[in-house]
Length: 82
Image (tube, rainbow, N blue to C red; front, side, top):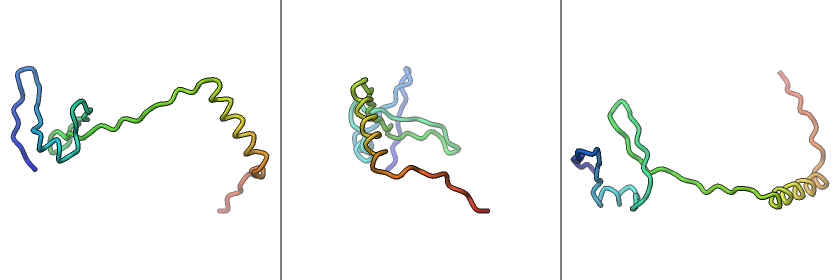
């Protein structure tokens, strides 16, 4: 799909609804813009949730690792053959 777009005096570019829908961009989504040898590439930005671990959550991880250490054999150093 191709479209000719005008850039406002403030540098605002409006993507037509059909173009946004074709690539899955919804209102308030972030878009990445980068220069390429062919021109400017626009693509949806990927955002991932971040979890900030509380002290209690870190203790849960430590306990789970300790439980695994009891079950799994100790890791022995691997020797690489050449």
